[in-house]
Image (cartoon, rainbow, N blue to C red; front, side, top):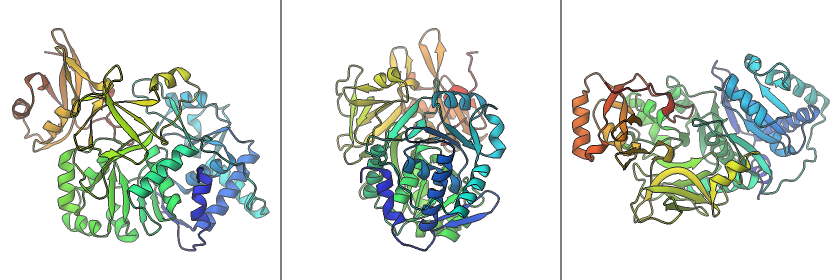
Length: 498
């Protein structure tokens, strides 16, 4: 089973008549699908895409919030050999224009609400119109079990555009083989079976929600509840109704869950088997609080758009706060210096990975692809260190490195110290220009009014070398984040020395 269509056939051929998928829209509308119904709708959707001229190798851009049609379009593209290009539903003119040009799609699918975001002359079909076309196909009964082209492990399946926080977004081409390998890694490592009940709260346009969540669901044939978007006010109701055993989240979701009353968190934790966190660092205090409130140790892991999942804390064994764990089966990782030479244990340097999950390159960008690899290893751009027992700990992006007076400062180390302070909720440390030292660290803090600069400075002095103490503590109401919770440091307000 080296292609996704074959991997997913186990779910569609299971013959189950119970709900494979429950969908809850933001307006409260509920929809259910059995695997047989989903299979039929996918074939009908594929027939509509063919009618729009889509063929193997074409790109289909999909700009939609979480909904069943998103999944059906994804599967229809896979069956046709069309490359699926999911786009962040929060993107607007500039981002959408770049992707629509770079991917050169044969078709763009969005909602009627968002049609105006795309050029008038773009080949756009609204999902509402597409569903009306699908109804006509269903009435004609012309899309039952057609013959589809075969796919190999090298066949492109998805193009995921990177967040582009340091420049124009690049399209990472993920193959069937990449996604199959990743699915197997997660199913094996996290013991996912058809008995699980997966609560899907992450956006499907991101590799976390799509490449991990949807693929693991279909690889095992478990039951999924998909919500249009995470809603802190409704999550207790979802747990009571659906009784999930498995959930993938990001740190901001787990922070919100900790705001729930204790009687709710205790009950929610009892039926759960596994909480997983990724896409951004999970502060160590959240681990401790979550265990106390929910009775579970969150399993933190590490992946990227270009590689899917690389490293994870073990299902059995120590789930170490602050660490992303050990490499998945068939994945190799190493810590190297600028020249690509291995460094000593517990030394912070560049993290590189290789494995069947790692993409082969960026869409129509050979220069960026060449820069991304070194001797067959993907250069993640993350700084990390490896402990003597094999656990990896991330220390931030190489691009976030602060060089102050010739010393290397890693923002995450400073952030973790500040997050230990009572009343501090969020922290982002960045470098600011300084005439004498080149750069100095500046801390942006989301904290209660009772937290003083003097107390934060004293905490840093007691736990860090003097040159790592932030020059200033800037109070902000919130940190700018992407849809998946990554801090957008370039959007923080500028600091000027007084």
